[in-house]
Structures are given as structure tokens and as C-alpha cells.
Image 1 (cartoon, rainbow, N blue to C red):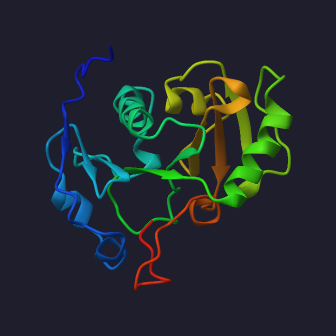
Image 2: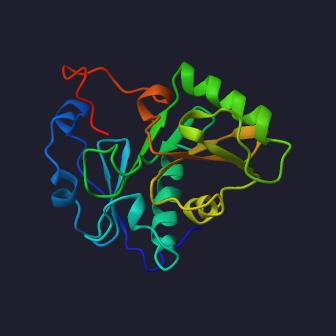
Length: 201
């Protein structure tokens, strides 16, 4: 099995927070909610970093990437089916200054995008472009990789968002690196709330 290593335990926080409450949460809410040095599982769809220096994608570098890979593995263990997508938003397209990963189910647009990526990437070895959103690059991995280490192979990820698509190409995952915009709300099912246009990203 996967050990916790030096990354700390994952702490399951009570699932009494809803999308609606998170949608109106001020910046700092995640940082104040998770300070354990590892990560926390929140609201049934988020992995939240428990380290103060983990602000966002721009915080990841070669020296600390293992910590972030570990959190993406935790998201995958909670939503690893072919209807799942694991998402980080890039700098400038998030409302919380604490690194977090969404694990969600795909919507119809997400399923269509996954099919397009599979056609482009399943039989290729390297990163491919195919008119994907946000000038994205996709790559298929036959088994679950260290996702952020893998994403660095596409170039700098400091202004990127990374999404992971389990159960791609019949096995393995596709990693999509997207630049300077967020695809979260177009590909994932976000439960309806009373804050229809104030989703937390």
C-alpha cells in the first residue's frame, strides 16, 4: 500500500460544510481549517493542504513535489473511477490561497473532452495538443503517476491547472495541463446550491 511517508496523515474533517457555505467562504477559510502539516479531506470533494506554504500551483517545485503528488494520490483514492476527474485550478482562477484539489464526477462536457483526449493521446507516447481547453496538453499514463512530477514534463506548471482523468484508454489515466484559465465548472458536476453563481473554486 501507499505509505504516508513524510507527508503527514490525511485528516477527515466533518462533512457538515456544503458547497453553498464554501461558495461564500472568504479567502483564508481553507488555511484556517487545515493546519495539520499533512492534508485534510473537506466537504466530500476536496483535498486541502495542511502546510502554510502551500498556496497554489505556483508553490510546487522539484524539492517539494512529492508532497503534492501524495495529495493527488489521496484524491484518486477517493474518486478513481472512469466517471471521476481530479482538478486543480491555476493561479488567478481560485478563491482560496491554500492549495486544494477537487475530486468530482464528470458532466457531459467533461465526458466529451475525455473522449477527445483519448482519441489524441491513447496511442501516443508524449504530450499532445488537440485543441483542448486553455491551450492544454494531454498525456496518457498506463498506471497512476506522480501527477505533478509528470505534469512538469509538459513545461512550467506555475501558471497551470492540472486535471487527472482516471479510467482513460481502457486503463491508466490522462493528465491534462491547462494554462491561464480554469476548466473546472465546464467539466465537473457541481451540486446546485442557493449560491448559483458563487461557486467556490
